[in-house]
Length: 83
Length: 316
Image 1 (cartoon, rainbow over the protein chains, first blue to last red):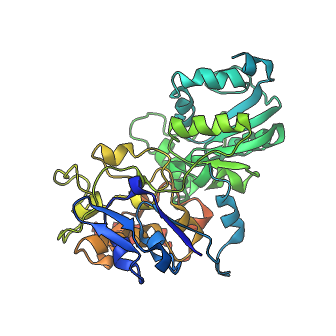
Image 2 (image 1 turned 180 degrees about the vertical axis):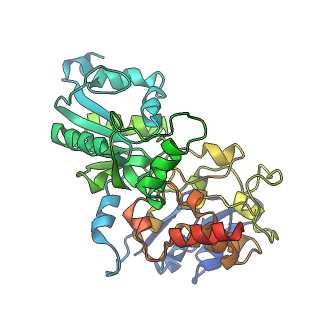
Image 3 (image 1 turned 90 degrees about the horizontal axis):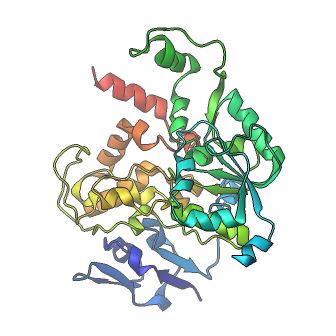
């Protein structure tokens, strides 16, 4: 099953993940200005939240990676070597 | 201590190509921790510390700076030949950095501005000796030689330099994260009713509220965190010095301006297209660190020369 994590310290409280999620995985706390994962089991790994999050605080594991042909694979390979 | 001294120290060469030299200073910024590094590392060639002119064989080579001159190319090739592991160190080596903004000017324009028409010097002639001729384009290090690792940042915060050096010595993988500068910033990103873009010199920004929420164009959300966010936490917008985040670099359909505009238009009332247009108008500032990198500079939608002409035309 897909695994979704949110790095709590990095959350800036914009709430965009909660707005964009099609399956309402997130909960948003207005007082603390923080998002949290409430229904991880509903995540369909569309990755919309990971892409919209300004901090890059949301990560997914154990999901099927769809092959896409538009990426420059040589360049993407370099990303693995970033320290 | 005894454990470290019994081991053979790791030999390191450092080299400085076209850049400001700040990356070398970042090593000194390790403060007391440099003691720990120096126990395990033996620094050989280093333009600011040692007087070694050649390129002795070393296990690790740290190369900072972009390839701008013919000398840079020769020095980079010599480092590759003599170092087992080469690290592109700092934004100039990884993306072309601030030097990379030279891709929008011809060599003649650069020589004219720096030497022939320089208002603060009296000679007004281009040098014919001792200054290495310029290469046709500015390029990041990895377009000239094979690079084993990349450590972006302008300069990379000493915490990342320390972690990289120690992990290489200990043979483990450094724990570098892929989060953005926003992840370290302490401002709250709230939805506001701001409806216009502000220039960085207008008004006094609220220190607790995100710059994007206030209408200032901050590059924190599209910039890799290799700095621990000193600028936004001290009231200055992020200028993107550590280079673009992974999603901008790896996805051809995502770009610095579209990513900022997507987020900013969701938390303010500024239309998305107005933000895109404003970033294009000021593109030389917003793309300065990464435009020499092929993944940014060669995106079909990256029309820097057109944007510069449009901006010049709008000045009348």
